[in-house]
Length: 213
Image (cartoon, rainbow, N blue to C red):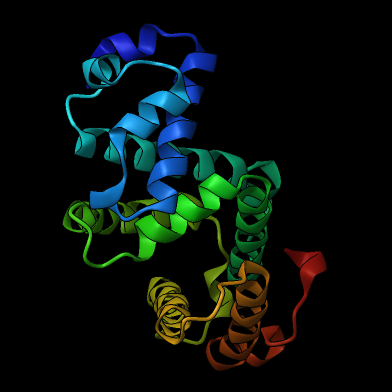
């Protein structure tokens, strides 16, 4: 990416990012028009490719931007004070829902980016996600109270199991042709966590104790 992009005002940068997020969110990657992105951003296509060398570079920039925004908005002061593994996940899930509902473009882009399998950028996204997952887990879950878990239970593996369940849920929705509802998914996800709590926590911690988190 051309560093000249960062010399633009924050307002102009955001206009380009939002335009790209809208177009990429509404279309498959190969069908997303950079001409339309430029029009919505209020710049020429030539200038768009002056800031970003190609379509893929623009897409990956927007993806990284979204990831940073999600981390910034969700990992607030209260998030870092929560020490219960499941309450931390619930708090993060609720935070994501609030953020996504406020911006339909973010919602559409996130769903297509996270769960598309055949896009030209899919391999690059998978590589980025795999590299980040354990690092982010250590960053945000380092303060959890691991004494609540049964001996031999690895919290990171429970985290991955729950993520896989979420991925499977979304895959089923997509395969069935039903409309995805993030509130319904969050309700399901919370019920999975309640069941998982009984399986992996010691008896005295199996009942939710939000006042102690």
